[in-house]
Length: 435
Image 1: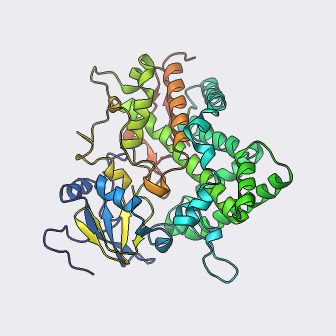
Image 2 (image 1 turned 90 degrees about the vertical axis):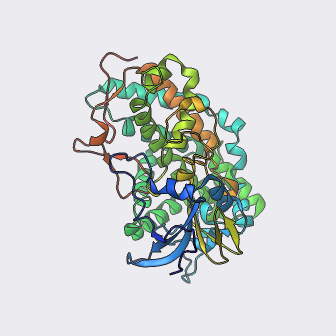
């Protein structure tokens, strides 16, 4: 193990030494703030497959340091795939070799990455996404209608709104039949389990990829006005393989469903438990002032960790690069921590304060650089419509249990409430008739 240089933090274990505060599951370890004060980066050692000390890495948590790792072309994803404790996002071919055609978009670099990403790029511009607004509004309204009709005794906002809305939106965009969407939920849940269940995740990835290949064949014979058809046609024109199209569809589905569902659920917790300067909850404030919804969505994105680890997938340097206060040597790993970077006091004054009045801010929740989130505009649209309608129609919404009694999924990569003793992940209630 490399000895730290004078002035550096001691080498720590990741993620063991960086737990979320037990009484604040939506907050981050205080240690990140200490590292930011010391220059934004620290040396850590990752676990190997047996949980023993493995490869060293540079942990980037300062805002500028994270942007460097995400945007500098010297950092490559392909060379850092399947590094513990992060999952393997590729599959092997018949000879046991890792095949880029069988890899998810997030693990590709440079031209391989651009060629696949461009198959869907035009479908996710701000203008293109706006065309989905009426459909998203209908989906959100139907979900709220059904939750209200079932009554507050059974309401689970994670299940009834978060998961339902996000799955149906991405299902409609891609063209996945409604009858097949429950299978996607099962596959996605299995994929996003902890690294201890890597085999289970690989099986789910293969099953979902096989389904996507079947959709491609169908769209080739029966084209429709959906994203899968458009990607299939563009791939044929540019020479991109069916496997790459399937991998892109896979990434869009997983990235556009579980993460958005978690944002709706966790954002509800934020709005119900934080207060406007006038003393009212931010939830009731948005009911009175719906024009503040976009700012609340941005502050949710900034302050809510997107995963239990708070980090994007690792990168490996192909040359020496200065990252914050540390030099990452050629061949070394770097871990870009977008969630801690969103709490960097050098960029966000009073960073732990939940303040929707900050407006549109320079957070890194959708990553940065070549791998910035393809579906960021769609995610914002979903959240803005969901919170606009929820706060309008149910102004007196409350958590049905105290925050410290919520159950959190300890295994899933996406940070989200999990079903508790009564089977509900985010039980909510309302004291009077809502509309």
